[in-house]
Image (cartoon, rainbow, N blue to C red; front, top):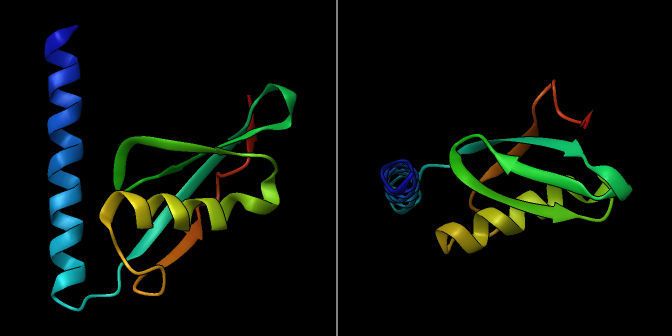
Length: 94
C-alpha cells in the first residue's frame, strides 16, 4: 500500500510540475473536468490532467467554478491563465 501511495504522490508532483512549466512558458492549457453526483446532492469534481486531487461542491452548477479554484490552488496559477471544460461523460450519478 505504501508503494501505491508513494507512486500516486509522485504522479501528482510530476503532473503539477509539468503544468506549472506550461503556464510559466505562457501556454494557455485546457483542463478537462469530470464530476459525479454523490449521495446527498454533493458533487465530486476532478481534473483529468491533475490526478488524485478532487473537490466537493454543493451542486452541479458549481462544477466549473470549483474546478477552476482547484486548479488555481494546486498550481498556484492565475485563474485567467487557463481554460476548463466539462468532459462529455461528466455528471454521472453514483
